[in-house]
Amino acid sequence: MVLPFVGGFMTAAVLAYAVKKFKKLKRRTRVLGVIPARYASTRFPGKPLIMIAGKPMIQRTYEQAIKAKNLDKIVVATDDERIKKVCESVGANVVMTASEIPNGTERCNAAQLALPEKYDIVVNIQGDEPLIEPEIIDEVVQALKDTPDAVYSTPVTLCKKDEVKLLGRVKCITDKDGYAIYFSRGMIPHNKKGEVDPNHPYLLHLGLQCYDSEFLKVYGDLPATPLQLQEDLEQLKCLENGYKIKTITVDHASHGVDEPKDVASIEAIMKKHGWD
Image (tube, rainbow, N blue to C red; front, side, top):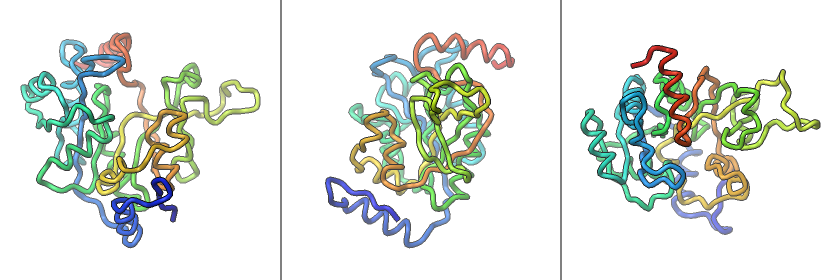
């Protein structure tokens, strides 16, 4: 067992979690789905409310998420009244969270702490994935239920060969049992030629993240780690502290909305498949 340290000393919260977690692997049953939605994005302000084929993106994401069967409850966690108003107009439960929360993962934790009910699993459903398949949500939840030694599960899919070197596409490599070895914005695995191998199945990491709820409570207390800082990828903090991440490979043709130009490609996919 590898235990995480903070500046050479283990925090009380992290120690308590580690002892509890590894002393007895618990059965996880109750599941909370959270869609974090922040208005003041640096790269794309107001992104949750961008219109996609006539509906705000946050609405489309919510409408996909509520089709999942493995969620006991789903909420939108936001810091903005405009987003709250749109979500409540379509029947979504909304939890207001602080604007200064730095990322979606910690916003999910704030949401679970604000609710009176307790959950074993918290699913971070990215608000900029309007075409996320509910079946993938269910599969990721089931993966964490079935893998008690992991604290985190997440989906990967085959990466298009022309996107392997794109820094905006996060790649993943796993061991033979599907546990994540590493995530990178660069090409992984990297070969001696430094060129994309047309015969290798590169894996693209999808934004859906599924956490053990107790681990999520202490995740924010873990300090940033060297690889996390180099890659600007939160999930590396888990791996660098010795925690396991279980991946599942799914068939998913779309990616999220990172910038305004992505809206057109999302709408094209919707039109192709006859989505309303």
